[in-house]
Length: 221
Image (tube, rainbow, N blue to C red; front, side):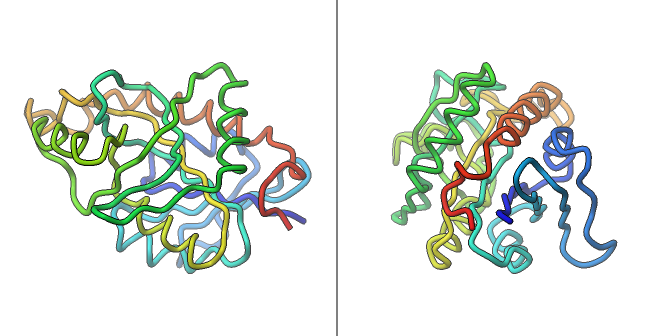
């Protein structure tokens, strides 16, 4: 039976994604934050890693097997045309001079499923940072340096692990703040960001992924 592995970082991202998988339940009360359930033609596992590269790297030990993996969550906008709620599907993840390509076949299937759900995913690079970018100027510099559409904090660790283990990986990010809107700039807390909009989009994305037929999944076993 094929397994679809979905990876998120934060509790609210996990809650949004699990709206599409009401039958999933936590595997154990302690240990890895892992949920599992049956889906059409296969099985779902959802891993919540925690924030940042180190947390992601450590948590991935809870996902044995050949995947495929889908990374789903929020990201900060770098490209000036992006607004909160826009959906980005990564062609590759960049961190400094390092670059990891996402599996092109699997990524294409994921992007097509999201488009069929009525969203308009944009394709491009995702930057993976070791710390939050705290000013709009930081975002402008990051965008100018590599041309990435968005920035997040777990993708480099996940993409590197996928490459090492030979696991097909795709990444879907929903913009939670535009390039010129930074919580630190305006003194806003995380709660002031439009997380309701982002969570709703993440739920749509998850429902689209749930509709992928098991036999269509790159790397399915």
